[in-house]
Length: 296
Image (cartoon, rainbow, N blue to C red; front, side):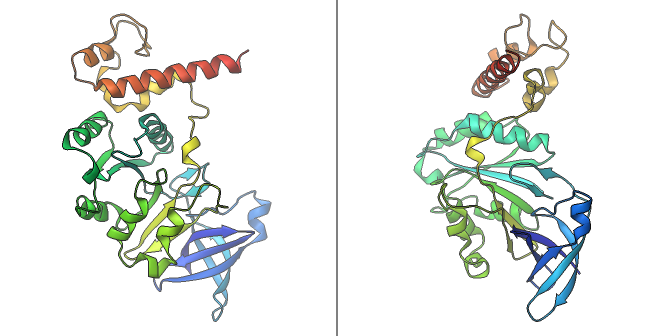
């Protein structure tokens, strides 16, 4: 049998089979420990059924992973979707950028969702979308109240495994209820689990939804840092800068303090969004400060 690990707790792995929408409680073979391989939530696996009545089994093989995240420790994510409210709470664009960079480093595409557009004026929504228009990410503006963007989100999520992130109060649960109206009855109140408080004990868990669709809540994203990244490499994760690479006066220009910088010229001309560039500049300075501290 083949299935996907949707939860792992205390040495037990809960494997969902899309063919019959069942979940099997499995143990992993000792051979995995000997090879120092640990099954991850999101892994596609082969397993033997040891008790068909009680849905028990043993994981016997982990199929090749498409990608792997360290925090949280999950595998085979097709895409990540980060949700912020358009207003109240004000979206933290620096945090959003760190999330995008971490996903990009893992080879995972990011979808940006600015929710609660019914609470913001059209100029504010346009301003937010403009910041990330050329970032390479898909952007959706949504409102459950006005039923805006819901069908687009449904299409984006359908048939994929999506890591869902965003602070509390931005409407993640409302979006899921609107996109998957039958989700609560099928997953044991998914909206409550997705929206639970930061002090609740968390286990990585993927929620299986109709149409071979999986949603994974991403815990701890509010403390994301770009661990292990060199400040000089940061520019490669800003899609807007790509066309200007090699066109600056100095080779290896990091687009901050150097003269005759093509990127800064593009910002001055309004070709590159100035807010997006400011986020880059602050992030670069932050990384440089951390590098200095490491070498003291």
